[in-house]
Image (cartoon, rainbow, N blue to C red; front, top):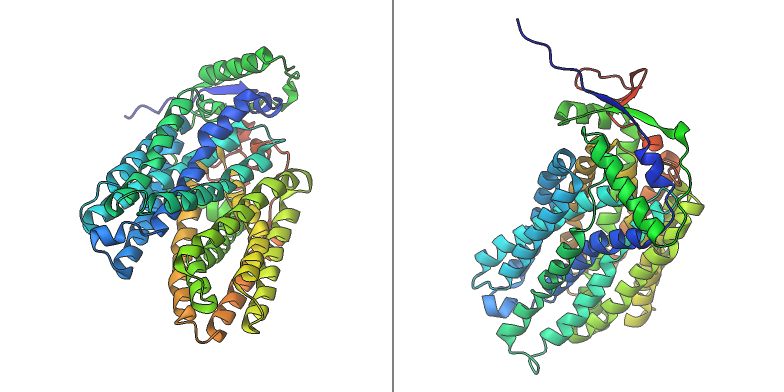
Length: 492
């Protein structure tokens, strides 16, 4: 006769309420810098590779260069899926250290490449590290940052990708200048910029605690309380007052271990089907538009406006700064005006501006500068909406599978978005006929506006709310079982 498994211990905790009522402090800036810098590394990495400085050294033509991007993308997808599940199971801190280390190794070794196949392998590894970062970092940020600031902080951090991209464009101008560095050396040195910055991040991340929310639901309530005590003490030492906690916001949870895939499926498609639809739609639409424009802007400038290849990078810097500005300046309104209103507005405005530029492009009344200005205006709004896609997916699902859901939706978005560069490259052709690309821009604007309409209708009002109020943890106990557990498939 088998012995029944011991019942999981239940604890009543104020950890979420204590974390959400904290004032902004230097501790939170540590979270922003230590965790958020990953997106700068991703933008830096993509732009340095886009400069193709390695192509001549390794004897790579356009197809081989394209494959390098494909391997990086596949690495991101695999890394997100693999590390995302481990992040929910083993903790946020362990995985945001491991994923960063994987990126450092992959990027650094790629800079030592001597053949295309070797380059592909390590680009895949670097991508896997960055993919793992997307899952682990978004989870940790949203669980640590107070609810009052969560929207603007998450959006600003995701938007710093474009700061990295601008930095990568500047670095490419310097390191790929053969008057400064030999052709075979400059591109290799540029691949070490990310790892050098990453080493500094590992040092900072060692001082970032594990998510107390994750500890609370994994049988480590004492560690969670101790971590919050230490955070509060650090804030008091800054001379700031820590408000009293509302004890009515205490929640009772029990330890929750590995989440079976069947439970994940029930949460996504039975308990929260509308939220799943919103998350996938947001990620796919923004990924499609970004990949369509980002990977072909240089071809458009060169083929339709006779812009020298060497000058395309200058236009990109302006484009990247516009994206960064949108995320930094509009993020505040996601916390004050609300998620649904801002998601609808940013997605639709981005699509409308792109649609106007499509008609002007087809009428041949734009030049390289004015077309770039329209891109900047469109992506000023799109960047905030795209960054909010990661915020939305992270906060509308239960804590115990947060990283995994991010990884699933991110992977779907990346795979669908990967179609866009090939499609738009074909529409551009040799630059003699504007009509195919015009319809491509119309498609891109329609896709983005569709995403905005979906968010406006089905989006979740999450601004200023505790994560536990937006989605019950699977481990939540309130009289009867409130979550979805292996032995209880309630879809309340």
